[in-house]
Length: 101
Image (cartoon, rainbow, N blue to C red):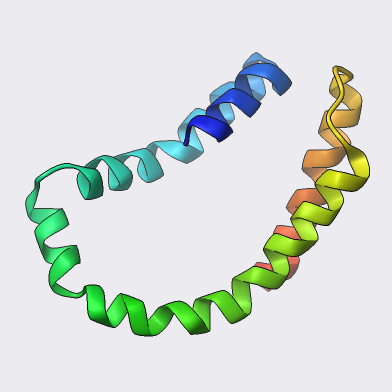
C-alpha cells in the first residue's frame, strides 16, 4: 500500500487523489482486518488452504496482466509531467479492462 500511496502523492492532482482514496478505502479496510488480530483474520486463516489452491489459477490469469502493466510502466517511465502520467494511467486502465473482460 505504501508504494501506491507514494505514487498517488507524487503523481496525482487533488481530484485524482480523492478518487483514489474513495476506491482504495475498501481495500485498506480488508488489509487492516487481515493484518490485525480479528475475527476476519481468524476466518481467513481457517480457509487459507482453499486460498492456496486458488492461487495457481489466479496467477495464471493475473500474471500476464501484471507483466503487461510492467512493460507499459517501463516503456512510459516516470516523469514529472502530469499529462504523461495521465496517459500512463489511462493505458494501465485499458490493460485492466482487458483483464476484467
